[in-house]
Image (cartoon, rainbow, N blue to C red; front, top):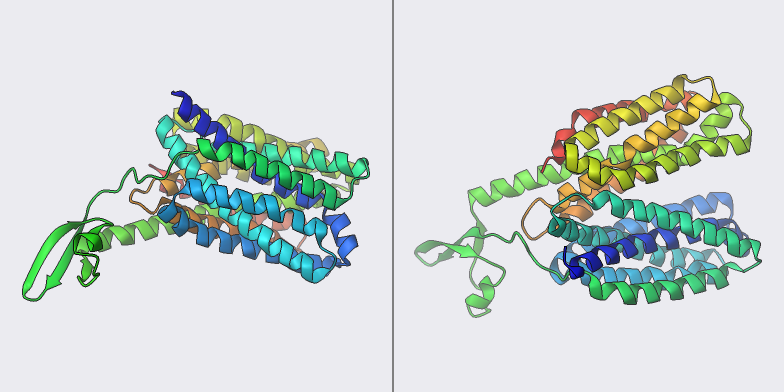
Length: 415
């Protein structure tokens, strides 16, 4: 591998780490910020949804923009945005200013998610071997580092505005360093698309490119109609994107359930102390991070379909252990199995979405991202609704069944 490609990989690592780091700093300062702004717990729930909704908007806007202007440009813009806007929650003095700050931060976070994953696809394609999971592992590592830094500054008595301002400045410096090393925008699989032009009595088929209007004098007067073959290809592409989105929805739903409900499940089901219950999420997140560092080598050996299929089966088995276990060590092992099983699936999905061919890789990824992100939000909410009628542990049967269905549909990530 030449030096420029290694630097590009390191730059994408930096983007993923920065995203996780800044997001974690907001999370660990939520109690202090809500006290400062007078936001109640119920209103905070609405603000979390506002943050998520803004992120979805950012994802949907970033896809077409990255395809047009290049993912490198979008990474620079989005990373700058989150570095600046992460300061906002610390400076907020009331609910209105906090809502505005979170909206801006969410917009940049969603745009960075799409653009940095598009860059990751370009780098992975140039490497000619799986490396996507390692990028996602760096996001987890950045989140862990952000949590440690946030805890340390709070212990030292730093106010949130000081910590977040320093983090924002550091983010701008990191962005300035990494952006020059990212891969420039290119269309590696542009291909030619048959188009038909109707000019008076003549009906001729030509090969169309993005410069068609310029070739006709820039008038835009020619009418371009897609051939049946192109329309059929577009329908196949749409079905593929939707299928990948559904798989992402399921896996991220299970991840969201584990993140939000694992500790409470251990406390309620086993009567464990709060400190012991916290080990459940620790076991899940530790094996997920480890699994993402290992998943690339495993994917290179057995392929992405096997990663998704057997990973989903392992996650389902882990949830089964959690549901049936009467002992804390066995329950922790079940959550660890779940984290390891879910670790490699989502990166394989994003790689598949970014390699569907054509010139809309970022748009395809933004659609898959949006559907998957909805699963991350919906999972905890669905479990919460179910706990009104059945025990929390029994409600975990929902992600268990869905991950089994995901294993059955794993072929959709084949390249």
